[in-house]
Amino acid sequence: MGPIDKLRNHEKKVYSRVDQIPSGKASEKLTKGCLVLEGGAFRGLYTQGFLDALMISDINMECVIGVSAGALSGMNYVAGQIGRSGRVNLTYRHDSQYVGAKALAHRHSILDVSFLTEDRGIFEPLDEERFYRKEQRFIAVATDCLTGRPLYLEKGKCSNDVLMKGIEASASMPYITPMVDVGGTPCLDGGCSCKIPYEWALGEGFEKIIVLRTRNIEYRKKEKKSSLAARVYKKYPEFARALENSNQDYNRQCDEIEQLHKEGRLYRAAPSGPVMVGRVEKDVEKLGELYWLGYRECMEKLDELREYLG
Image 1 (cartoon, helix red, strand yellow):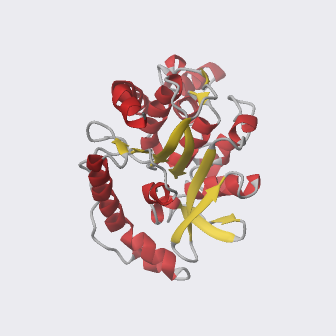
Image 2 (tube, helix red, strand yellow; image 1 turned 120 degrees about the vertical axis):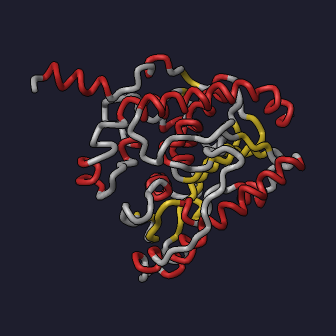
């Protein structure tokens, strides 16, 4: 196979409308309240479209907390980089340095999160100057494998290196990814202990909270328990217990979020229907459509959102 054929094959793996994803910088005006971002691996394309629409519409929340893919998307939102998350995922989904063999060799994980945080010279670098400004809070949620409890890593309250390790840990899936050392603490995916960190936002006393889901509001997980976690993580019994109970905890969170939404205590946004995209989805056209779904549905909700935010 010659170089032209290789280039054509690569182009087939890039989303066909990637050049239509919006770009630019968000304004520096901050909106009072907290934005809570669920994870979901590549289902996070919905989040990325939604966040781009928020930035374009001049809604930049003063505090952002995210789990797993939500932490990665939130990082770009706080950096004010419209379209960066979507462009990276829809262009490099099939680059094995990001997802695949080279990522596995480099980071011992099928997904190399550092691909998104380091300047590799192949796409727009993270705007670190904007990201690290103290005016806008950012929290990544990882799971402490020693205690099985959420670990909240906040920008400005830990070193930049520890925060980036926390973001990496937050997006490191159990079973297939080694634990990440976060300031001396072994950690994994924040979703193992807290899939939607709205309770943190409530505990911080925010009067306005937007919870952005990556599943439709009717979705619930199966609660059947398995002994796999106890076998794989026998040296970390508290983590294994949290992992075994995570689906049950998630369903409780979903029910509580819906009740709080009805009471007006928070605003919940979610995909309008079932999301037919896998956690490590390969079809970039499906991922691209999910991005635009998030974008459109945010634009449709703008009047509601602005009324809620006051």
